[in-house]
Amino acid sequence: MKTQLGKTAFISSLAFIFLTGYTFGIQKDLNFLFKDLAGKAKVEGKPTLAILPFKIEAEDMAKNAGAVVAEYGINFFQDSKKFKVVDRADFQKILMEQELAASDLAEPDGAVSMGKLLSARIIITGIITTNFGKTVINAKMLKTETGEVLSAASRNIGVAKWDDFTKSILAEKSQASASLLRSLIVPGWGQYYCGNSVRGTISLLAGLGSLGYAVFATIDAINANTDYKNTDKNVENGIDNDGNKFTSEPEGQAYLDSFYDTYSKKVDIQIIAWSIMGGVWALNMVDASIAGVQLRNKFKPYFTIGPDKSEVIIVYNF
Image 1: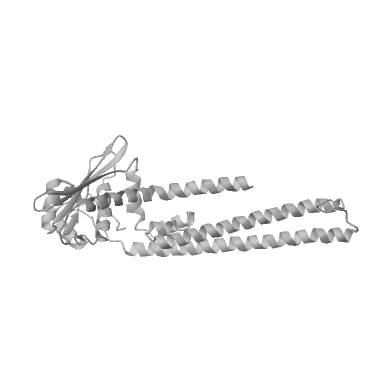
Image 2: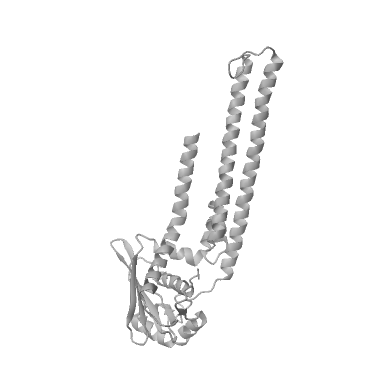
């Protein structure tokens, strides 16, 4: 029994790592990329910064991947005290007025022109390509007026499936159900997905704790049931579990009843334990739903429909 439970716990742990590690791994790499880029740049004051969609030079990669990477950068620098990111409304206004598609901004000339139109002192551009099976992202921070490279950074993402990753962001981040479904599988996952790490950690610990207690109570009830059945066989032979003979039949029955009472109490505890776990899991899902609604309400696309109407890019602000 212990061996089986150990295997189950091990498999569950691997499943959790697989389900959560994929998305968080890419996010971590992107955060490192922009942190490295910002750390190398020497700037004065708090300059205005514009981040443009990265150019895609890799085959079989989602065309919106460049915008997704740029969106991560936007959110990274919005939280930075070192730069002021160009307002989303201003960005889209210029984009429409100049009749530029988001794909045009990936080109060097288009990027510099856009930076000047936005009155941004600094722009960030980049290229996404592949090299020996790895996704490579190269980013540069430039002075808009001179084109001087202030800093450059590169990150290898490994064998990340960018197409699936991009579709996940585009399709799920705008749906409150995305967080609910995740927390249905693993408590706290939906909250983590929505960026609420504290609530996610609380839900995860509460969920795993209640699950552990329920499993322990179940094992305890199973053991009590086994003891009762073994005792029943011994009582039929007129002896207790230590091999001592009973002086009368009522004495044996009373001995057996004590084991049944113990088993009955263990079952009651088991039911309560699983009820507690169900309640904790339900509260976790409710909280994940709330987090999902809050996330959806914050949905503000930065890169949107271009004038050619043939390309729609909607990227979520994390």
